[in-house]
Image (cartoon, rainbow, N blue to C red; front, top):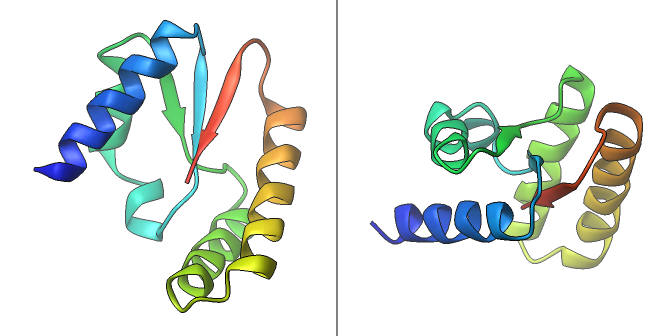
Length: 98
């Protein structure tokens, strides 16, 4: 239930600030979840994980590192992935969510 509330609040805020697309970075399950896409689509925002398989695999591994408390390196790497994906594939107002 809490996950649904967080998803809804994040999707609403994304729409409020006029983000047209949101990059979802998380576990493999999260990045391919239709629930996330549907939750954002309800507010007119497109949500997607990285299209590149290598970026998806690396992201999932970095999320595991974050869960194990190895935050500094993982957070830095996730930032690089997000910047790379956003700058190379997305136009308009975009956000990324971890």
